[in-house]
Amino acid sequence: MVLCSNASMVYFALDSLRLAVVTTLACSLLLQACYFGRLLFLIRQSSRARGTRHRGQHADSSRKARVSVV
Image 1: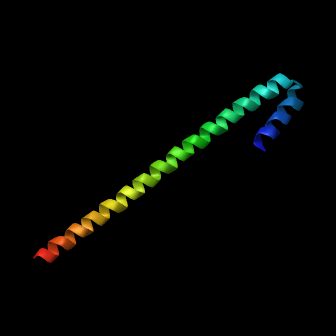
Image 2: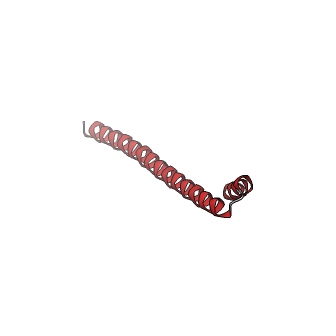
Image 3: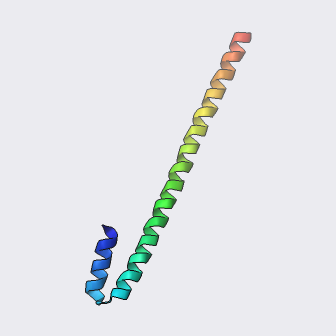
């Protein structure tokens, strides 16, 4: 929807099919780059959260092991 509106606005504003195609391709590449960046950010955030949870579980299990040995 964004690409179609971009193409139509550029075409009607500048009356140039070539510029409409070029700006639409540029907008498409920008949207893809933002999408990819957001996915990498979410993956990094997820792995950090998972790493924190695992560290907490290991600390709890070692405490339990020490208590049972005493």
